[in-house]
Image (cartoon, rainbow, N blue to C red; front, side, top):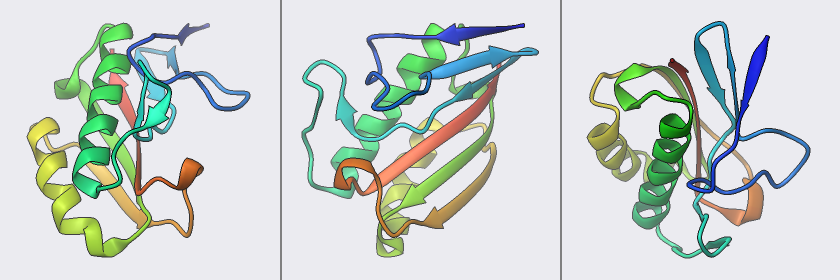
Length: 124
């Protein structure tokens, strides 16, 4: 049995998927991009601004599922430009202080032309 997570603290799904699913004590969150859930728009053109918005969106999903950044066990990160890796890492490190397992890959293109997308798996 699983529970669908839905919150207005993260952008609504752009397609036929859920923001997140809790199953067997874990949250499986869909990838988050830099859409401000209040406006429905990507408001920053920089890797810094977009990464901060992505982290806020992830925080909203984690909260809605009853968990937190400290309980994230795995992240998958997608960057449009690996030249942004250092800057992305600096911001990422402020949020993921427990240092979960991680993959980080370059993506040729991301939804809405954003620079970064991050998905998480967290214990609930």
